[in-house]
Image (tube, rainbow, N blue to C red; front, side, top):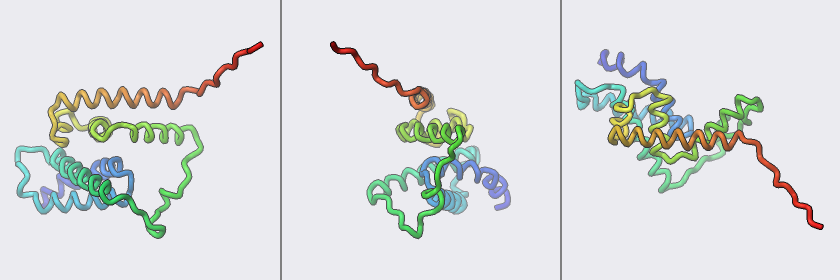
Amino acid sequence: MKDMMLLVEPMIPALRRYARSLLRDRSAADDLLQDCLERAITRWHQRRNDGDARTWLFTILHNLAISRLRQLARRGHHVGLDQADEDVTARPATQEDGLRHREVLRALETLPEEQRSVLLLVTVEDLSYAEAAQVLDIPVGTVMSRLSRAREKLSRALSEASAPTQRPTLRRVK
């Protein structure tokens, strides 16, 4: 039990970050993380000893998130007034960094789920291509192609967002 805690506890911040990026809701992400940790503890004996615990935990978290998102798509999203927290009603920062942050998040939302997951696992959570492939249960080549397409789309979306809008020029008609 002690060795399990030594392996799992340092990974909790990264797991929470990934859960929040997938669900975009703090309380739902914390619930997802709790379910992930509960599943990991109750099924610790099923983990392969030669496998990486980090990859195993991210796989559990990812699969639980996909199940939640599918369930949410079937049921629809509902937030009661008493459940709305500060993040829903807060105003975004007015400074340039806040605007850039919002642009990046908006551009991330435009990516398909498959590409966003690969991008977040590799760039934010610093998983290797092989580890990300294991988490998502896809070939390494698919990880590389999804990552390439995600980076290209993200770059294009960010350059479009930062480009000044051009006013159409008017013609003179005599």
